[in-house]
Length: 479
Ligand SMILES: Cc1cc2nc3c(=O)[nH]c(=O)nc-3n(C[C@H](O)[C@H](O)[C@H](O)COP(=O)(O)OP(=O)(O)OC[C@H]3O[C@@H](n4cnc5c(N)ncnc54)[C@H](O)[C@@H]3O)c2cc1C
Image (cartoon, rainbow, N blue to C red):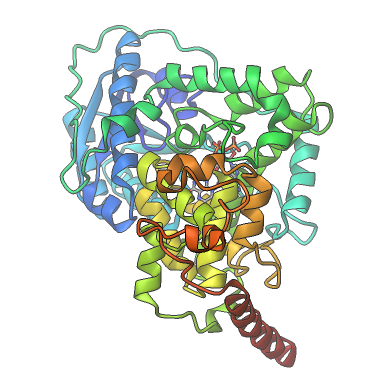
């Protein structure tokens, strides 16, 4: 019985549920689909596509040690996937296709259409829980609905983890040679420019690199995570998001590393470890939200009432934000970090997202799209969740009247301006007092190379508060 493992966002051989299932069921081949049209539709960032391709190379090498050939097929859009898969199954006499679940609406539709066409030609399609610790739909409130509040969701996750920890897959043994050759992996895909070598070197590909990063984080930083995770100038977070998003690491492997660091505890013990596990559960939460509330996949506001907000159409201001020219150093430094590394520190994602959606009153979807186009870890659920949290349009979002002040955030989380000076070298010689608001350095501060603040923070604060206040008055009237 010949099996096919269809790799998607699970680019690893260790602890890969579908790969284990395929290899246990018979002789296994593997395939990956190159889908540039779909990637464009999803705004996938060029650096992310490059990261996938580099990881595919590494995956192919790993698969070779198991004698599993990795085939490459082109399907411009996912709507082409059923035909391409059907042809492949005919060509290699495949009996069953195995794949790990993915959760966006388009992903679910693609799999359903592939499964239907395969069924017509007598090929089975089996899918597995792999990307998450818990099956979406299995963590529900007493009324049988999806949780909308993270702390309540987490409580049930803890209960489940106390009963049983999600088991990892056993190590795989090599199968006998299939005599089938792997296909070459393209080094580049048209429409997705190759990122700089400097960016690539920040994100080395492959499971080995991912495990080294996880191990180093567990050994050196995890126990202080609660104290350091908000300081962008130091490497206090794991920087594993790109590996988790591409499935080079599994959440079970991350959980295991946390448990090993904390004597098997996830809810008590070292506060750094408990806080980190909490973040893994936020990842889980937003993916469950994606399944439970499909409007999120269509970029609709989770709180539908907020669709009535009159977001400002301000292309020049949007452009200044996108180019890191707002005149607020922490915001601009954060955008520089994103453009140059493909990643942005979590605290700063919240700061820049609130600045765009609240201070500039520009639709959060503009920011969501811009992030996706640049993030190496771009993930629909987490990105949408983060943006809707910041814009107060989402589930368990920050209350609308709570706005981060970018200057206070800067003083609090980058007190000596180390992060700012790194990304905005033109401010390197500004003293610690003025680094957060350089325009206050007076006449001495005549810098043609750094802009004046683009808005008055208190006026912009008033504007957004009034906007949301009107909305909540309407909501009260409707209720
Ligand atoms: C506006 C906005 C957009 C975001 N977009 C993305 C995105 O596209 N992809 C993405 O993976 N994360 C996103 N996040 C969440 C978070 O910022 C990143 O996961 C985190 O910065 C990644 O760095 P790290 O790996 O060092 O995280 P760590 O702090 O080490 O956390 C460990 C892991 O937990 C997960 N995680 C942590 N925080 C969150 C969170 N708030 N929501 C969901 N998962 C989380 C990630 O997988 C992360 O790798 C976004 C947050 C905001 C506010």
